[in-house]
Figure 1 (cartoon, one colour):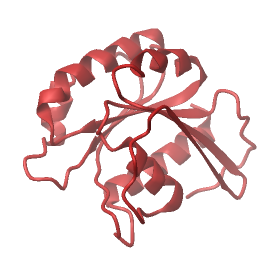
Figure 2 (tube, one colour; figure 1 turned 120 degrees about the vertical axis):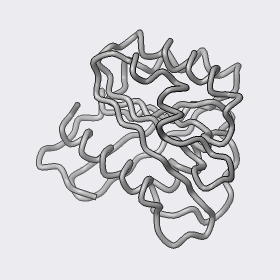
Figure 3 (cartoon, helix red, strand yellow; figure 1 turned 180 degrees about the horizontal axis):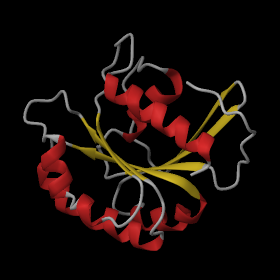
Figure 4 (cartoon, helix red, strand yellow; figure 1 turned 120 degrees about the horizontal axis):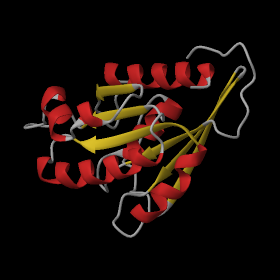
Length: 180
């Protein structure tokens, strides 16, 4: 990870991690924080806050569970976000319309908030390609914002991060250092 040349304030530097239940948010967040996945992760039942402190950099991640009863809380935390990371299970295309609906609702509240969509579970048979997911989520309609779409997967016991997870971590670091 790069280091920032300036100190980062905690207000407004939160990375909001959202997505439907079962998308792999908790496992991805664990890998971003620790560099590996040592055990299977339990789904987040409410909120999961993770801080990463390295050298002069501080990143606050807030994951909100993806169950239907938790989704109304997503909107409440948008104003604190520096970046929204939206995780999608790319091997479950039946959920794409629901993910698209919620994603677009969230994006209308902050037309400039940068968006990183992680097409997770790319290692599973039948996983949707990045291009097909881009179309399924209508990402060409998200407005004039910084948009990143990265294919990811995490596996328990892998010694190093997949290239997609590494790319996501590097981009998040860069965006927090830039302060948007």
